[in-house]
Length: 342
Image (cartoon, rainbow, N blue to C red; front, side, top):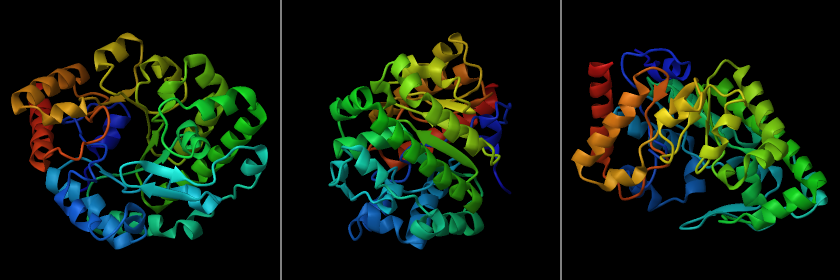
């Protein structure tokens, strides 16, 4: 039978138990993944649908989580746009032709997702037709987060080049936002048409902005992406790191679910007046602690969520040195405790 618990939770409905999945549940904490990585790079894996589907489905089988998340990177759609991007081990996305001028933005191509990224959609079809009895989460990077890689040329802590363009060259900035917004809509639509049942937008680095700048420089783009995606009939989750100060702003953008990192509790978000479904938010570092500590913290989160409009997750991704048995035990605990308490 198909397990739709996470879809009902995303709509704010009371569920039999609190559903759970983990960001980066596919990755270096998995022995199966590490074995594959001995032979292939991340980009090489994602271009092999059968292999990618295997890795995407494995955490569902191993941990009994309530959703699969498609294995790919937020920069996956950039290459067809004309961006020379590589995923460098220990660094992340590195771009050799960063965006600097309006001409660079104008040179970016529109993507034809089923042609340019056919391997992604073949992977989705294998998953939903052959491997999964839980919803598949598709995703994209939000325009600010993706733009930061494109402008900086790679990961950044301060986003100086990105903010410099934003403040000093609004014409180029908004042209880039339009390009990335259009791309994101097409990209997500193709994921849903292929079988993804829920979408997460990773606005990972948006916490670098204050509320005023987020609304002015990104608000319209985010509303358009979320609105167009929701027209497809799927719930949308919005997640970022260090973005507690943006939660009220995010609450106006139209998503069904707000993902919290570990810095803001569910109670604090509710006290702000946020009534929509929430996702989160165990500190991923706690997964390296003794089980008694993990259990105590998980109980606190579950009791605040009260099994209505709550999806249990981490406040960021799984660390490579987390033991698979810890994730399995945590999933079982979340299911059992929430089923018995609420």
